[in-house]
Length: 252
Image 1 (spheres, rainbow, N blue to C red):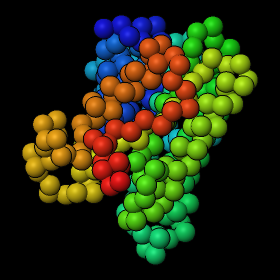
Image 2: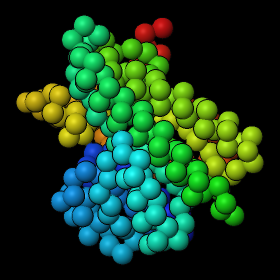
Image 3: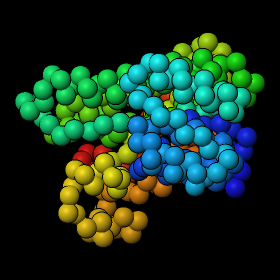
Image 4: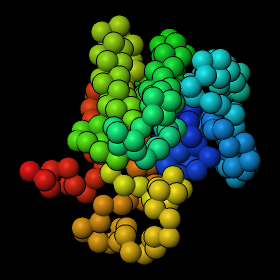
């Protein structure tokens, strides 16, 4: 119950879905958690549910001043930062022919710029720590293959994956005790997924019991986030870890 005891973790997009599952599990395992999201009501409700070990900060991850504020609030409340979970994202549907330049730029601004800023400011906060730090980047199997109906999202997650590798090597060569890894889920049954698949009965997805299932539960992702946040993964750095029930390799 104390796999991340005394660590301070900042989780973006923490008000729902995978971010919420991450926050609950990290807190249950001893971490103090900073929850950021644009959904103030849900974010504050989750912070209240967790208790004194949680702080909610309203944040638009694409805004640089928002990152400065989130990091400063973390340091002011808890005195340090040990873990960043870059999780928040948007996922509009559209092929290369359907996607407007405005949509493309909006997705890249949130999903790529937001993660870049998170890494930049988290490294600044963590590099002087006397204990190891970890940056967890939420990517997607889309970055390893291709989803034609999610053109901008796929490109943004490709950027996230490459950024994670760059950050891992930079921190290693700089002598910082900060690891950076990317997680690549296939489908996750979250509010964002449900909005893309209205009317679908989750019982039909076979989550957790059908060996052919493509959809997982947010807790399945949170389990891997916990491992990467903990010192158990101290030699895992620059890795691309899939959570896809062998979906990607099934096409070989």
